[in-house]
Image 1: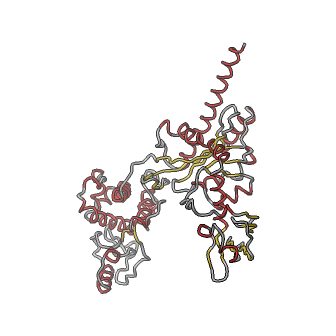
Image 2 (image 1 turned 90 degrees about the horizontal axis):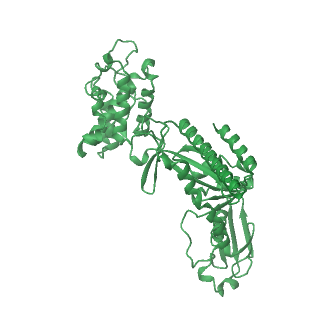
Length: 458
């Protein structure tokens, strides 16, 4: 599909002689076509799905309590439970999940099921797991004829180890207890729940779409994907041409999405100037853009802007990493640049700095025998970038990026922010199809307007 898009883009650019040297880029979230699940509902869902795949005769022989979650009416626990019941129910749930994994992981008939893989994944992402506990007293043969539910579940850290604030003696006692589990009671303490901030943003959000990831931005939670789109923005062109579209999980940085196109766009479309926002500030990607003769123009920068009273590094005159003159016109008597770390440093003569009118607001620091400065070259790059943002001519050029939001709205948000598809491959292909369709509509509108203009001129 991406190759089809590239061929289509090349044809339209050549046919309509579109100038693509200047392009603007923006990204947006694509909400997954899944229900937002709470943590307890997610665990209940994967337990239920696996139980649903097991034969009824096996489910009926499972230890008491596990079969409860085979009932679809028990899935939305976050609504059915009282606040004080959530923690204990979740602990029971993960104990059931751990027992099921231990019981069926050696049985290929069930361990190869997708629902079992989901069960394992959620358990690994949401809980603490340790190497299998040694238990010399319980050595069961695989073919000992035990019915489902008779096998103990070693290999999971006792829950009380992670949650108890008691002394070490209590911990030893808890550990000793778990080495002698009651074989028909799955609700023993064998797992520890991770804290919410310990769970990766790439963890499963819903087994209906395992590729979707979690992201918080502007105080809002998002589950799904992110798309990155660029288009031409020269006003003399026949129409705006979408030049690239990329889709990845929504915890992917904008700079990483841009990196996928750095090598292609200059040579395939002629890109030289790219208008982006501060979210694309990414040192490695900026270096790659420079290698491919792409100049990035940022409409804003991340991080706090320095006080207006403080002198900027850009107020000094630089020749690469060497300061030619400070803001007051003096050259340091000693300078160093360390390529490995990118550190720039220097020393200024005290006789110049002591009487300087900029002394209080300068970036130099007073030492015993001289004044000195030291910073990483990245800070100098950002200082120059902020200085360009204050230039009226640059601001006028950056205004070209204002239409990037309308691009996102045209391609995505007219039919809602939620995708109709599941799985990253399907979401990618749907996005590419939207980009192709948008370009064809734009070309069609241009041809229609030209056809109307010619008769009226005649």
